[in-house]
Image (cartoon, rainbow, N blue to C red):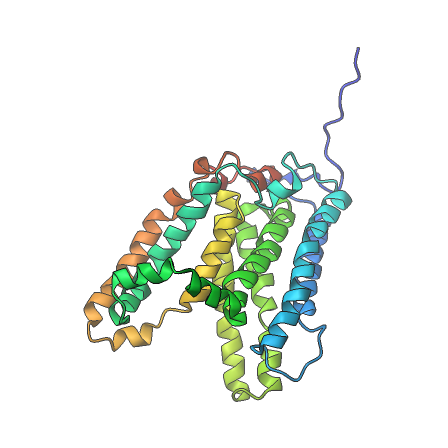
Length: 322
């Protein structure tokens, strides 16, 4: 008689069921996961400061140098997930790339639906932008299909950083690499709100440069840092939600790029707009439609069930269900 395969999990990954019937991960796995995420976050932020310079962060030379170091760290970031998996012996059915949201199944809806959902949320700012823009709709279409316009964009280091490099590397490191390490420990729901903390804290490094170049008062810089942490943490939770629901990296990257382009909604400007009622109604309508479409647009059935990261948890989560 053939020897039966041992399907029992490794001691480090074996959880227990509490009185409520919920899966509880062992403490050792959580410590390893959190420390791995912390090390990865420190590596990402630290790579920005390996270059010594007296120039501000928006200087093209500084941006190019940081591109080099950030792209190297981001390129090596899957090794953190691989090392975590090998050390913890967490059994993963999908491949490492699939766990990180790099796969073909459901790619087209993953490109379109999360971005449309995010644009719905920004209906108010988009309406405000359309009203204030001196271009006609057809002018905008012509510019969008003008290759010279895109050549100009890609030659602008700040545009390249904000629209391409930052969204791609930050979503790869802080979502695609960290969530597969956090989900087996905390479950999908808690991981969505834990993962953004690393992302928010990572943005505190801007305080160093603001203080260094004396760009504002101490209290102003502190308030700016608190606001940025809060905003990036909320945004990080949103893109983590998209990543877990869709199982794709592309959706969070495109949403990140779009939000970087739009910036934080200028609500104070909207309150003073000549067509204030229309603009504010658009803001309200956008929020309502966003809440209505949040789960339907991210239905995992569009992207292939189950999404790879959802296979890492022993307790079923409503986030992973259609």
